[in-house]
Image (cartoon, rainbow, N blue to C red; front, side):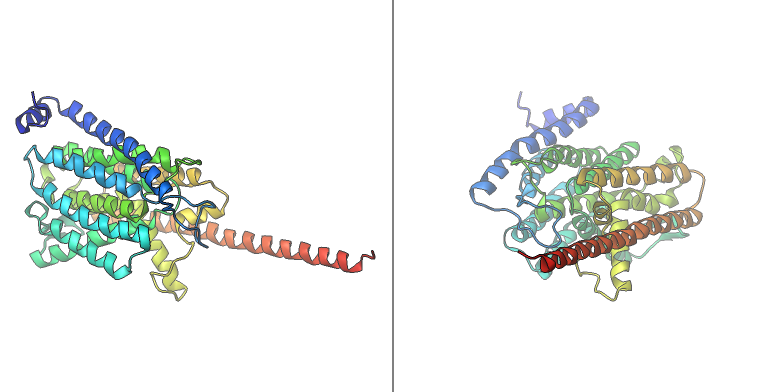
Length: 394
């Protein structure tokens, strides 16, 4: 029996769906666990490490090529899944992933221009937004909006893909955060795709969960096994998250959602709840930068994870806390979406997001006050020491 034969894989998939899904997760986990040490060895031998700068949250140089392992695992598994022949979207996915990975890898090696990364993102997005399986012509009653023109659907899909790729890339600032956020997001997608009977997309979701779960072991390491996912990793995972989000958005499954107790018109809000960490953090930082008279693209330390780090939380504590907040928001949405329409639920979510912004703004200002006090204290100590030395007679 040839286990890679299309008929064999298809029969296993149909007969043992649960085991096949678990096997896909384990395959992604094991392959990532195997590949990362190999990537680490090469980067150490060639001295390909990330340089420390003023915005770095680390004190030692660490390789940032986890994306190489991600790409290898994703291409292998998606290629195997394509033998099921239940969708052609995977072929488009592989091409898009390749372009984004190459752009990200170049940035990890020698730093890419923003223009090159943007062009790569647009090019990669084109391979999925024009896919017949991802045609967006209906918002399912969100804020009273149902059918939309084709051209508007393409613009919205392009915006979603570009925004999510960059939003996910921006939260990759401390150990574990991008990995935990990706696990929360893709686990939620896997559950939803299971409920609406989209097995292929369940498998893609658990693949991402599996490889990120293995990656966390190395990302949280404090020794020679530590590695970052880098732009090669964050761009490809962000692209996959955007791909899964689009599928959930365009899927015509109103009857199925009603059977599960969800209002179809709340689907857009559900995606915002699932994608809370990258979407909310990016939107919040942009507003802060604009309010300070800076450009939205100017780097700073106003991200949620930076605020928590500056308030004395460790990388692991900050990442787990933010992941927990995301889970709470998803749970709250699932309770409210069964009884509240999109208009009122939008207002509730807006109020919740404003409350979270106020909490983090307090923490951010408290951080600035503490840093200033520390500097003044250190300066005062230095002045006193200088005074003592000046008055001492040897």
